[in-house]
Length: 244
Image 1 (cartoon, rainbow, N blue to C red):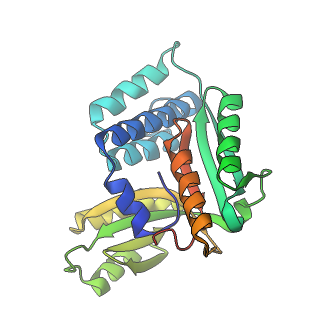
Image 2 (image 1 turned 180 degrees about the vertical axis):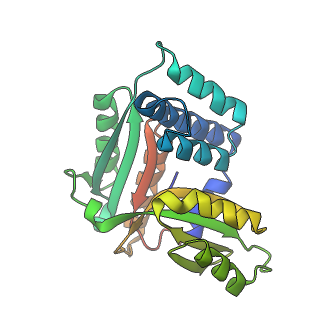
């Protein structure tokens, strides 16, 4: 799911197979279940649910699936999940935050700890790396053909309330306050820009560049295994050269 703010990560998500997309649908469904249990099934009064519906649509989840998930979550027999966050270090001290939604905290914690241990990292205490990250909104706009007017896009984004803007290879990345991301996405979409992704994420204040082939290999495997776990929603890290 989401990690360092790099086009390689975004492109990786964009090229997911149908099976992987199905897993994304399942994960978002679990998040919707938690949101409905906490705040009800009306997105007008439940801002968390409203954001998740936007997230689901950004990941091409059909409306029928979203509505079924909400109705199921409102039923008395629906599953009970809780949201948990784990923090730790990958190879060479890369900071890692893992968010999960689980019906079995012991199972999830055991799996996450095992991934860290196997791939030359270690799971730490709550707060050990979270101070290195801030919550932001991130909108990625396609510029694969190079025909987007950078100055005009920047002006439109900043007027809509964006906090930052940068070119990143074949895309432009617009940074917003977390609660503004979907409103600004709608403004940019209405202005004719192709939105590749829009989500709330975490932005690292520092970064770590891995030098050895071994560290690069094991950090990549750690992220892959965490993202493949059914309970894991998002993985955030400050690995700088992850797209190499």
